[in-house]
Length: 217
Image 1 (cartoon, rainbow, N blue to C red):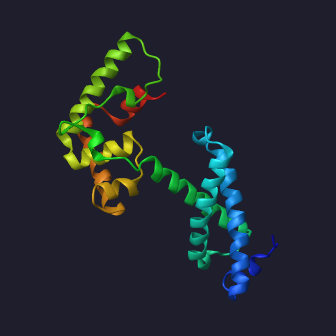
Image 2 (image 1 turned 180 degrees about the horizontal axis):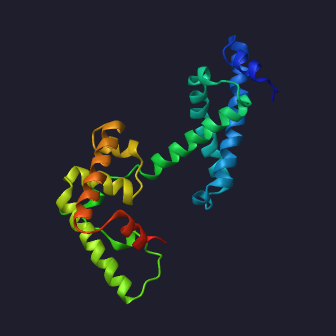
Image 3 (image 1 turned 60 degrees about the vertical axis):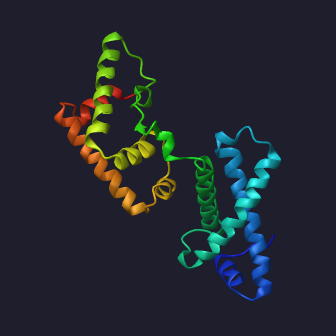
């Protein structure tokens, strides 16, 4: 594999077909190694996969990552080694792909039961905090008020968005696609939902500091 300076990478990747083909091959191999390292060393959720499976994932992702690097060549400023910059892009591609795969079967229907929003579960917040009988009763009462606030203060669309993002960790781009909107509009929807929910809870005597203190781990 040819060692190149930053300038040589840029020149070869945008040069004659012969130079570009060689540079693309080298780049793809480097990105594949970087992605494989990330998948095998940094992703505990992939620990059960065999070496050949992770290798195949790295090969597939390296193809997309190479295209992404080529699309962003103009943004490279030379503040680091070109290969370091490109590998960071490749890892972001891997993270994005894994997130999409995780939520590929996500549906807003999972947040509802018989057309109604599912009850807010106390297990969603602070479930690992040891509590005594009095604390448990207090937390249960607060959770009932939060559940009621979801129903009373928010529209169904706001409830779906806030529950998906806050409770299930669904990426905004996945949820936006499910809800037939765009990322910016969804961000505003969630922002408005949080504001309305906070205002409603505070009207019930539940301050933000109080709730954080009650449910912190």
